[in-house]
Length: 352
Image 1 (cartoon, rainbow, N blue to C red):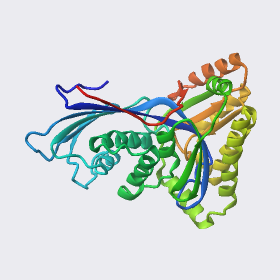
Image 2: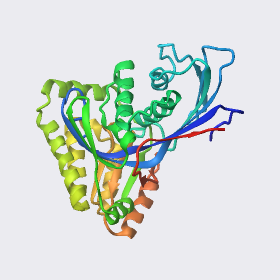
Image 3: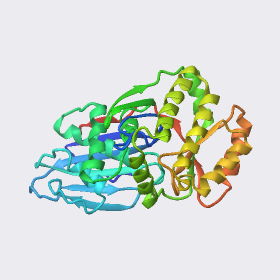
Image 4: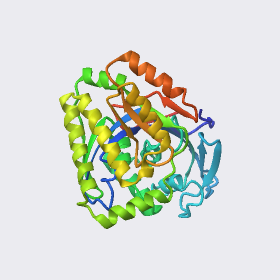
């Protein structure tokens, strides 16, 4: 997976989870101002490995980035503010002080397809920033790393971004995010009994909808609409309430009620714009209904491509039958094996 470089000064290895089943999404944004989100961190993970070498010749282009998923490599000047190639990666690298006496060979790898609507880009940014922070021995708290990753997207790159993806990657676990004033938030990792975690792990599935998610102009239409309606718009209020309900049902151990909340949230998204729930998502939902799944929800903001979370029922044979039929749909639609991630971003420094 990673290309080794001989004789590094040290190697920094960082991993972080992605997130699924974000109940209350769209409320963790600047136009909502206050929000509540429930989400679940899962593996497969995002992985960053940095090999630190001596920069004996003091060259400016001293950061080599290998994007393993794309088969690409690029050299970056960490002092150059121009983000012309892979701007998220360049923005993260430019956010951390990199000593002039070192060269970095960075490898990044994601175990899920790009554009899966599972917060992968935020996980990449959180993981890379956490690894880079070790160069100056900052050991920043996970919460601070999440804020920094959010600022890379919103301030450096001028992108629309809520805060929940960065928080999930940084903290892991089953999270309840209370954004009391954008972008400031508290994060609570829910303390859930082991037996319930095991049941949830068996019943929850991630279904890739066959193509990378494309936010396109449709999301800008939704954002403009929500901005005009304001923070007290009824759908925003409903989404906040659903996140609270999801948290409470999880703490009560009531997965059937959690499934109902997922369905309700999915329909709230549809009411924002019919295009947020794609034809492919509805074809997957139809099979989930056929096999009496407890709940389903399009991940992230919704739209073309991406993925969907399904909470299957308690019958193992029905769940197996559902996944078998889903995997036979074609068009690239398939289940992605997942497991619950109990921790967030983790960094290990290896000396030679």
